[in-house]
Amino acid sequence: MSVFPPNVDSHSARCNPSPPSIEVDHGHVFRPITSSRASMSVKSQQNVMVSSAWAANAGLVRRDPAFKDVIVVAHTWSGRPERRMNAVYPQDVGADLRRSTWMAAAQAGDGAAYQALLRDCIPVIKSVARRRGVAVDRVDDVVQDVLLTIHRARQTYDPSRSFTAWLYVIADRRAIDVIRRIRRQDLREVHAPHAFEGHADQTADPAQGLVRADTTSTVTRVIAGLPARQREAVEHLVLAGRSLADAATLTRRTTGSLKVNLHRALKALRDRIET
Amino acid sequence: MNTSLNSDSANERLISDLASALAPVRRLRPPSVRAVIWLAVVAATAAVLAVVADLPAVWHRLGGAPDMWLAVTGSALTTILAAIAAFQLSLPDARRTWALLPLPAALLWIVASGVGCLRTWFLPGTHVADLSEARDCLIFIVGLAVPLSVLLIAMLRRAYPLQPALTALVAGLAAAAAAATLLNFFHPFDAAATDLTVHVFAVAIVIGANWGLRGRLLATNFFTQ
Image (tube, rainbow over all chains, first blue to last red; front, side, top):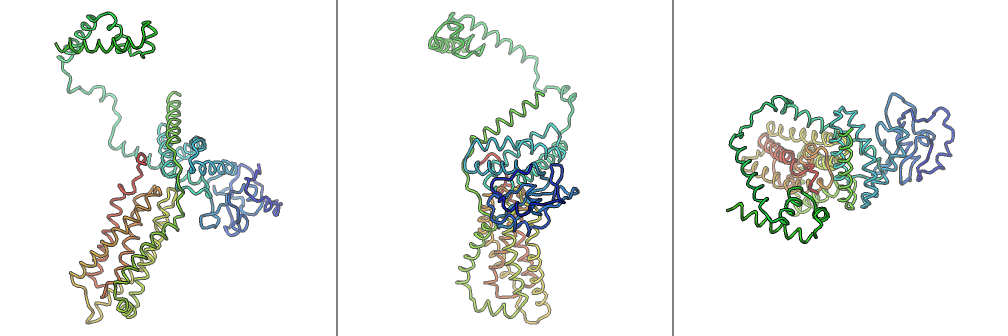
């Protein structure tokens, strides 16, 4: 449970070995007491993530089940520590560190890390969207919006800050955007399947059917009048839509021969239909 | 089941598309540093204008009316704070409350300008700007705010604001306040009611234009990289 991220100074943790009153476990959430104490404790840590157990040992957190707040302490750009995220549970700390590392690699152009990161984000985005009240069938809209937003905004991410917190805010905003979009759509559109089915086709014309039947019969007749090899090429390549290789296997002819015959057949068809 | 498989494969396709389109990016500098860069441009403009302006007259005028100092301080502070707030807001995870940062300074600016305006009613013989002078003020503020806004918006676009309207509004305030501050080099009279109205009008034009154009300038269009 109390796995220290690699860069956290374990010496600091050993200095505060006894947190008797604070038991850290996965079911509870904590909030920081003061940021100045955090500043002393995690000073000079490049990486800035601390595990929940370590934070508890260092006296950075206290149990407060009423708040879904953060136990993670980080350095801001100005070097001061800050609360990293809302509603981050102790077991998510490792995941957050992993995502931050992946994102830093993605900023440097590492496609594999980027794919892993985006896949890892999907469950988080879905949970944020569902909590916002996005309908189940629109959750994937939020997922795709957020993935695109991460892509476009990736230069704004500072790896010294929590990736998960960054993702939460973006996912939440995109979820709200999707809800608004759905509401606007609902104002303009109605769901009326019977009206749709019963709507008369303005362009319908009985003569059209005759014309279509006539054209079809002309084409069929002209194709039937083609030499055998050309007809074969047209039937396999155009009407059946087979690939050149498949058609060659079926007809036992070379692809070159099929191509030549198709070309001649099309030319002949064009001439006969025009005349 | 089938739809969930479809959507999963759609997500997977999107992820592989995005990963194949991945290019290394240069991380943005912290918002405060970027704000300082823009403010440095404003300061450089001020230095150029100071060379042209009649500085002893400006000092004399400001020394004679302490509330004008307050107004200048207010507008200068508004410029600085609004620029910082705009750069903060341009980050996708920024809190909306950053927009409140320049408000106290803006309040000081408005109140102090209002006091100057009242004085022109009580003191006889105060020079009150006529319409042509007021028009010059308008042209100066708008003319200077446009290039400053363009630069600011161009810098903000490098980030990715998810609240483009709010970001553009605060950016407009920064540019308008900067222009109004620099106007003091060439403002040989107190702000009377007409003049103040013109200033407010000019600032409103700049803020409104920024806000109105944000759809095109700060639009979060996914497909144009």
